[in-house]
Length: 470
Image (cartoon, rainbow, N blue to C red):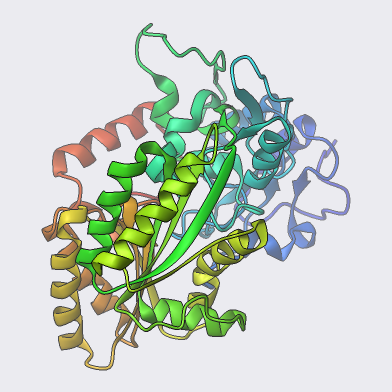
């Protein structure tokens, strides 16, 4: 007897009917989609690139169902791509001909905050914003924040080791992971969710899967670390005369405020002017400058760091390190400045002929890199436009260029990043899009070691095949 989903007349071309029968027997109704039942959203890509129709879509609702799906696909050597919120910017979620989709969208369970251990348990399909809000209600803060917080999922954040605006204080997503439950390609479940701060019983398998882009296993649940909720916070938007001045101001704030400095963002004029016009908002500062900085401070016990923050900025203005500044005086003003910064990505996506390079460069070499890149890329296209913004506090630049010669310009930019000791992917992973340049930042020995891990954990290469490396 056929166990195909209701309404399915025949299996997709190239799919073994026995595989679909097996999947139908382990998944509930409407959790296995084929043919016309597959919604177009599974092919969406934030950069508008082509994604093939999936052979079928699996929508498991538990770790056990993920295990059964992977075991079946592994037995039939059926390649699949893992889907979270599909907000990735390196193409890892795009579908290749012949692939199925394993979507974790039904896995949205979220436990209560454990106050004593300052952790929370979240299933892989839980949106980041949901975790942030749960932490806030319990009097805590979750350390990672990114612009796509409402759609991006915990599983996807772990798979790409998401960064965001507060890496300066709280670190990358890797630092937030206290425990993981992961399913290997053959269906084996690895569960290490105890959240121990000290556990030296062999290899730390949890960290192996953070940043692996779904190529080694599928994260299904995570115990996440939380942080004390700030007693008060404030941000300021500043016009500064040069990159050197911006870095000098960063050092001053770090020396004065220590870990209370939670974010330090950079916007060049093209990004600032463009996003203000895109949002139709009044300019926070009328002063024209070489670049602009958004800095944030969080105080845990009282408002002294906030007062010190304002005093340090006043001194910077007197010394000419900053030309103009506005400090938020209310939650509304605080959020308005962050909305402007968050919207830079949406502004960029509204422009034509855009190539976005998510890069990192050692802070002491950023000025050198920017000058070399500007000269080299203008030699390729004299009319090229640069829209640069990002996380100056940790050396991560969103180096956006506008040119019809995008591929040639990106190739040159990535080579210059490598020459200046940087990374071609600071926080978005490799996926399909950056695979051609992986060798610029990783040695042949490192890539061979990564291949060895992939072969050991996924010998049939069913998980996100062709992402990161061939």
